[in-house]
Amino acid sequence: MSIATEVSTDHLWKHLEAICQWERYTGTPGEAQAVEYIARELSALGIDVKIHELDALISIPGKTSLDILGEPPEHIPAITAVFGASTGVAGVTGDAVYVGEALAPEGPVAGRIIVAERMLSPGRFYAFEQAGAIGQVYVNMGVAHEMTVSTIWGSPTPESVGRLPATPVVTLSREQGQGLIDLIKSKHEVQLRIHAQIDTRWRKTTMPVATIPPPSVSKEYVLVAGHIDSWQFGANDNGAGDTTLMELARVIHGRRNELKRGLRVAWWNGHSHGRFSGSTWYSDHMFEDLRSNCAAYLNIDQPGCRQCTIYRPFCTADISAWVKDAVSRLGGQETVPENPRKIADQSFWGVGIPSFSFLPVLPPEAPDLQKDHPEGGFPEYWHNPADTLDKMDKDLLTEHTRLYAGALLELCTAERFPLDPRSTADAIDQALVGLNERAGGAFDFGPAFNAAERFRKSAESMMEKAKAVDPEALNLAARRISHALNAVLYTQQGPFDHDPASGAQVLPGLSRVGDFLEAGPKTHEGRVLYTRLVRERNRACAALIEAARIAESV
Image 1 (cartoon, helix red, strand yellow):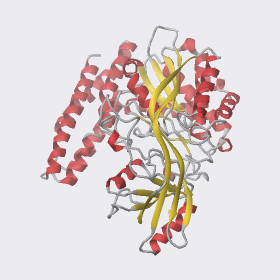
Image 2 (cartoon, helix red, strand yellow):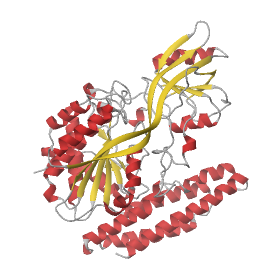
Image 3 (tube, helix red, strand yellow):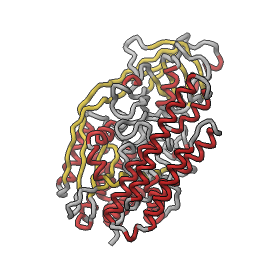
Image 4 (cartoon, helix red, strand yellow):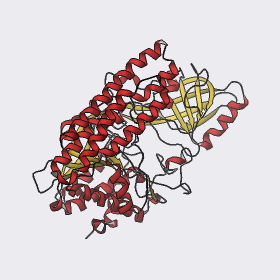
């Protein structure tokens, strides 16, 4: 019998209704009650659940407003963004400057309050703050969306704490903010005052992790997780993911005697209010266990909302062939998995873990599609109080959970785990060709091409004889190759730190060749960047040679 038939719509909906009775801000009683509910329900099934307690820097937004000064003055209730600065009673007052949809300053903004259109992003906020803006106002295209402005991934370290925001931010809906935009465009001078309250401090937080071991002595496991914290009651984001994880734990537990490797199910906290603090803590504190035993990581976020009918998978290259095949066979859709995206608690690239998400999204014609970034496929009520149970679709939630269940059972029972280093070789070759073309001879990628060629040949040879190789030996070699290459392919910081929370690139260290060219190879800045690029080339070559040696040893 297919495991898909064992997925229960009634169970999914029961748990979703229960979880959505609480506002689940990180480190608050509402989230704690949800944690206790999950642990209690799964423990009653005989599933082992451990509740981790951890300290994290958590930011929770409070009362915020924007005043347009003048005659007559206008007071606009608003929302702020987590990790923005609190203003105190006096507020922050300054002249407004309209910047439109610019992602970075295109003119002077120092000492002024910028007014921008479309949703904020941490990188956008940081660029304007670094240029001297004393406050920022974002007018969304539709409703106002809750956001964060921190570029720090997880809780800060001495090296990153200086990037914590120091200025306030306000978000307005289009209805609230269009008049302000029109006023600035029609007048030379408009003065604004921001009042923002944000409670940013270290909090003790709790995070449940369930373990379903295999009947054998194997310590190997697949990790599946989503975030338990939310904005307000967060039905789709991510109450739906939380109930999906509970149902996956139940049905896989029912098949536990079939497993060749275990399943570990985690409900991350601090996703929204700690900038992925929960998954980052787990990556840091379970590093050796993850490195030694975790076969793959599946993130589940926002399944089962109405109109959410297509999958947009993203993944590390090593598992991409299987992800494409799984969505086709189990989900009935032909897709091309995208490169990994720096969202959704992707905290394990540095550890080297093969990582993926099926990411259900709305199609372009969906009435609920978000107005700010419709290309993303998220709904307009994303990060908004309107994310409530009435936006959920029981049939789609069940359908998505069935895909996850079938995929996880395959991974937990596969004799030969579906990693293919040839796909990693393809991703590296494609990235190097693009970077080399961009450099136009200004930087020598030759050593990296040579190392990549050796790795490709070794990977092809390894996979050609895969059927004749002991499955455990093959699985271990493939996992070690992923550990060697994923940290270089997808991170700058490597295994023991976390990159800033900004856009992801393939070979991000070598991607700085663009900055090198912009600075000019003969300038001081260009020479500084050249030194960095040489070291990044060495890092890439060393990882490729190590991966080739692993493949050659099989």
